Length: 298
Image (cartoon, rainbow, N blue to C red):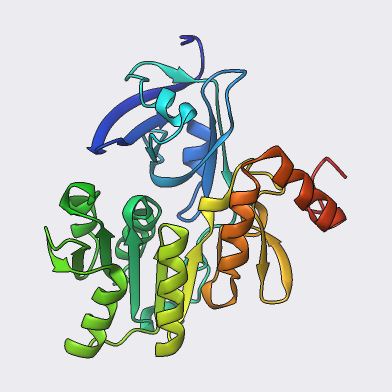
């Protein structure tokens, strides 16, 4: 691991089994980033590009917080890095910032918002909840996971959420059931009313959350960061169908109207993209729309 790179790790914390938080010294990113955006991390010159949503930032300390799960070779290697070591590249901010930030203040003040964070999705939810509180707005939040040991950022979220609800599939902590069960409990049994749901987590979780909120008539925003690979629109991995339009999560998002996302297509595409044969099939089928129109490959 090289020692002369700029992007030094100033803090490392284990949040749960194989889930880590790191603060990275990145002055330019820290100065310009907002909730909803992401960065691309490269461990060394030959390393894989890893897109990670921004969990937090400190403009004064010039640091950016990232959260990742060590599930592959690259993220497994990243998990071995220690405080004082550094990454070769930390590019960002990329993607579009949360639309909440640009919403007229009078409109946002009237919104009853529920954030739904599934698993590691708590990381990109946290800066949005924090931004809301620091700017005088309130929102509720659900953090869901399979069990108590996989709940992350609970204490951080408590500082900024109006009401924080925990749900676990096995009932080992908080409400017993998945996040959808928890949403239904809040609305049907506790009389809660929401105008907007922002759901971030695994693809399957976001899909079923959107099915539920569509039935309930609640506008829903999702973050399609799970489909990002290259992070610039060049690889074509994050090509999505949003309504009747082709979009790219890394350039046009990562946040979209959840009721317009074709989740089944996105999940099937992601599986195909894991093999060279699948990539070839997608390139041939999609032609000029396989990549983003402004990427260098055109």
